[in-house]
Length: 353
Length: 122
Image 1 (cartoon, chains in turn green, orange):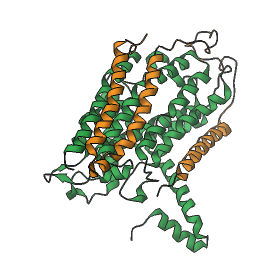
Image 2 (cartoon, chains in turn cyan, brown):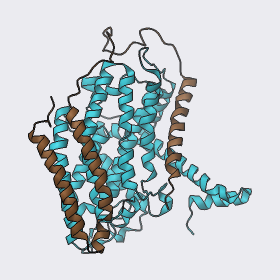
Image 3 (spheres, rainbow over the protein chains, first blue to last red):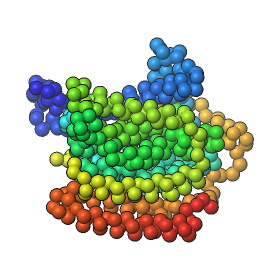
Image 4 (cartoon, helix red, strand yellow):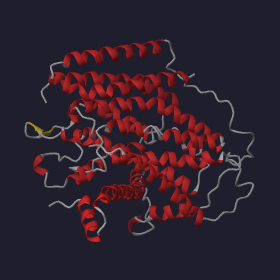
């Protein structure tokens, strides 16, 4: 018998004589807290990984003082941020200033609801049947928090940063949504588990039937929009250290800043995980012969490869200008994404699965 | 079976976590504000004026076109989900052609905006 969270909790509740109708809510609560701790853990080591990889690409060493190989560096940073004095400018708008980091962090956490880490119901918090639509809806909420933060700070740098954030949103949001549509068409399902199941099997006994096979263009569009979504160079114009100090979070310090940071790195994992699910077969192995490796390792492996690619791009390319991003989004990405939908429609209609 | 209560639960836990870490940090951090510390950061210059002023948004038309295209993407989602079902019922080409007409109308709109020269930063 497979060990599941529901099974464990049911067993514990039977021993403790707690009524059985408490099982389902407790499972939900425990699953949500597990996801929260997963995010905290992932973010700690993504930050470490980013600093190490950037150090490596730029011929530096990166963090290497706290703990073996500097592994405890981000934990130390988090504790430092927790104990830092939190400064709110006297002219700032108090409540929007405090609420803004919450608005940015909560959606970044809510997206993890539908991400399938492995096979079956126990590896995803809740596999909503509207999964892809849910993701594209939730991913556009943090921008409200960013604009709130920039406006509430009452600082010119922050305000410029948040206007740029809005400019960035109107250029990448549509290509991101349009690039998520073709996998839905190919799978005939908006649930992420359904999309993964539709990618099972191999062609000619060797090529995996991942949607990447017909969606190279869609994958490229998605990854470019995902770079903008997670505010990474070349599309980090809203933070742009060398132009805007720190953009929308110039005035933030202490734990409020940490929440922005947490959301940013959680988002980096999210966009990579979604790309792995929609285009690279999620938790499916590259070939059925390799299915002895547990699905969760395939999923995390694909996601980490994509995260590495994002970090690689981040440490290689220069930043684009706002108007360059806008004309790129509107004159290149959107026409190509529409073309890709037409192409995918033709594939669905005229090729056997 | 979908359990949409999960979405609310995630939202509540996310908010609770954010408030918890903020309160935790409030409890253990030092709190020594001074007049200079509480000034807005302007690279060390003495700040002048307020940031809440009229601002020229150079991408106003983009924002309007954005609303149209974002709604369009929402319209395409249900069609994308049902396309395979339409194909199974033998209505595939019909459904495909209908969406092509819809996309064509939007592309005409995009080309019009482009030719009018509104897709540029001013």
